[in-house]
Length: 399
Image (cartoon, rainbow, N blue to C red; front, side):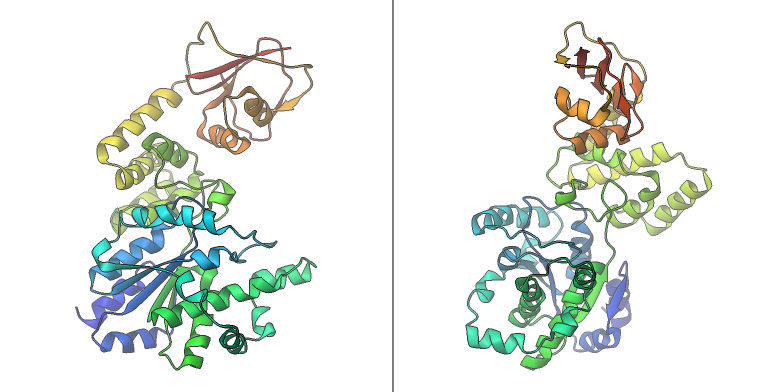
């Protein structure tokens, strides 16, 4: 494939390419480039936000480039400080390896396993001897580390910065030495880490890598970056109905970015949908249901996507439902006002407050048949009040 076409594919959907001219020179060498993407197994599953870079890797894999899928088993035990206002708690070795076990299987839903090299950075980072590590650290300055937004903010607010957090980007920089990386991909918040690899490559006399950043997918709250720790993620291993339900809780104004980053629709179709949502010619609820179907179809099947939509419409769309004769009771000591999310959790019809908030966003949580639309809502319980989720879960309050 000619360089112009390859460059177009490299640039498609990216936010920034550091040193694009260097990428062109590498492409002129007419060889498979070594392209790295690293992920720390800090949770058991990959979510659909991770699929943004993985899909980019697949595009580059399809035009003949070598993909290094790096599992940060060593760095996960250090903890990435990116975006953290406090020190990230390190994970145990057993926890890290248990999490890592599922990552490759999930990534191979998109990537070709025969054309992807899986590596673990503990294979080299755990073997660096102290004299060499000291020489590596000497290539970085405290002033440069403090340029990082996270550290600068914490310093100004007198929040502790621990020494090991400085080492994180040094470790990830060394990953590019071990893998002799030509191009590294990461989210926009990872640019600082990516650039440190160039510093270390210069020290070792390696060709400098090109750094590519991709947009971040927001979570189901429509505000924060999608993350399991923030309970706003849609996991790849979730059931079709759960996946569809979480999509339905996405705020209307976040639909455009989901269509753009997660679905396989043509760019022209995505732009038509975004324009229709903006001018009101397309109904937000219908477009959200279509989004749910498109996402479930990718990770399950078209049939499962259709069933998930039908189930959602059957359970949540109707405004009328029958209350079973026999339903559980929640006994309360008083009729003092309580937040609805607290009552829902106390009653057992949801497993967490975050699930209660998600059900409210879905329009599934009701009090005496009336839809709750405010996550901060308080009610004054009365004897016999009914709290419900969908058409199946009910509880009667007893004072």
